[in-house]
Length: 290
Image (cartoon, rainbow, N blue to C red; front, side):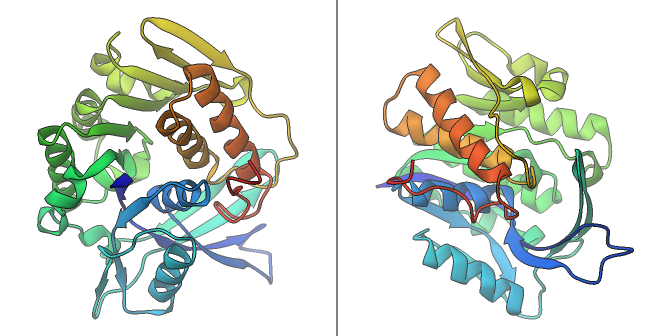
């Protein structure tokens, strides 16, 4: 049985101090669900990833990383004639990175409901989806909905990270409607402090809601109790990937049957590992290192 099934877009990412001035840059691959899948696999969980990549060098690199890290990539499709999307990331000391997207028309944004393996999702312990993939276009949103429907029909636990990226949505209203729908379908909900108003109808007592409070740490409301954990006190190299790493740590601890405070603790450990590395995922720990 697969522990966690997830779907999303993996991209190339070029990082530089200031693109307009720097002569050197760093090439990597990334993506919210991509990072989560790698993080869970390193901790010994079986994780399957669904996505599309172009028949190009970036697509080959995505597949190489997934397979090398032990992620089940059997459902990843290579789109002939398509291209793998790309992010250009300006890293700024003391500030969040400035990201420019080159993903319109990319292979990864072409996920459709027909790509979703209903039986594989139904045989998993958990499905994890994010608001980033839902924002990639109508077909991608319908693919996420199809996956959620498959999980719900098979009584598979559904995890959803709101992960609101305003630059990917046509309007706030469109984002609010889609994100609230998916949040209400979830059993485990991950939301940033500034996203709470977007999904307010989903913030009900029966749902496990994990709130990322930035530098103040994180909290979870479970079984009508609230638990808090402080933010990691570590040297920060790059904050990219830290949110996905936190989610992976929390899910890992949930799969291991740990308590909500222990889940928060593992989440903060993985988040700390992520921010101390220039890569979204390369600095994440194995089970032995954890």
